[in-house]
Image 1: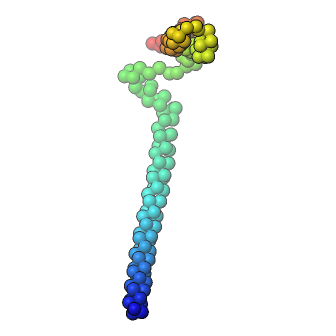
Image 2: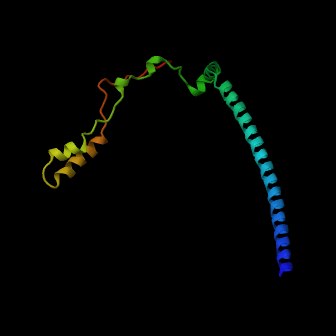
Image 3: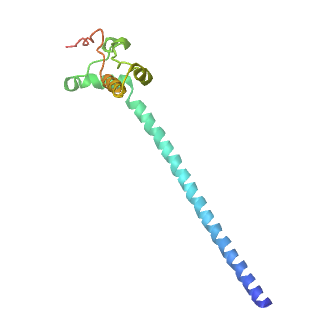
Length: 141
């Protein structure tokens, strides 16, 4: 009986040693993969920095102005000026709907609240026209 116990104990220790050895190799392999991924991430960050620098270089206002002037006949791009922008007063905002509680309190009968809610729903889709019409910017020849 003791012999069987010793044999099982030895097999158990050998099995655990194999498992620990195997886990060590898997851990080292995973660590190598993580290092490779970190190198790849670093390269991607460097490439992104280069691309951002190129984008900033290509979008310089003086360069874009020169390109617009060179291709004026084909693109017909006009330079921006301050009078081409609108003011806040010219923005058409939708009307503010009254709260549902107010509609419910002012209504009477079972179908009245529904009618009030439909009015609010319809009012949400209308736009208010600006008080002062927006003028077209001056056209350049």
